[in-house]
Image (cartoon, rainbow, N blue to C red; front, side, top):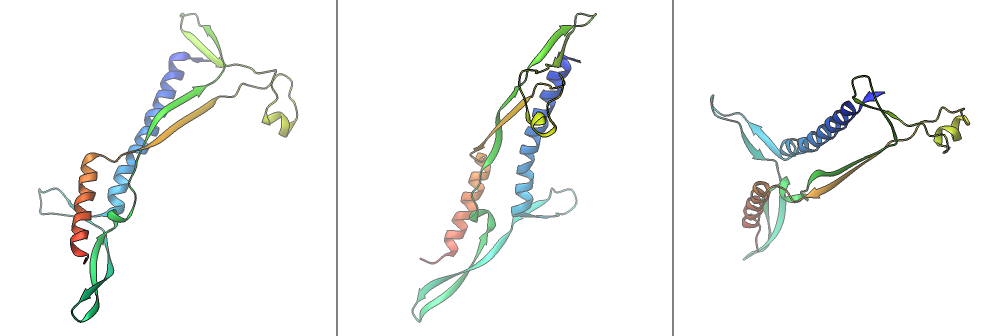
Length: 164
């Protein structure tokens, strides 16, 4: 048996840890598309976009010529910010109180359903436990406004380099 409050704290901590993991994607994003440069002592680091050189055809007086443009990789990929929108935890619990009147729970025994364990190992004699179901719903959000403006700036700089 476990104290009900401890069970709720464990679930809450698990959800918070999962949300932190998803938020860490933003830091990975910066590292994937920007190179960090150290500045003079006392100044924070600066970041320069990772780029690739692409060639574009351009019509000139002498015919078709090729012009090179520095394309930020950030301008070439779709951007989405995942976030956890909902967590569902479903289980059957047996509830009781202890000598200090604290609510205690245990996962309920499930004797009327045959589960995967029975199919693999054969039926047991009263040893089946109820299954817990965890469902996490994640959606892609729009990126933060600052990131959208940053991408728009790089896209404008790219358009200025491309002829036509």
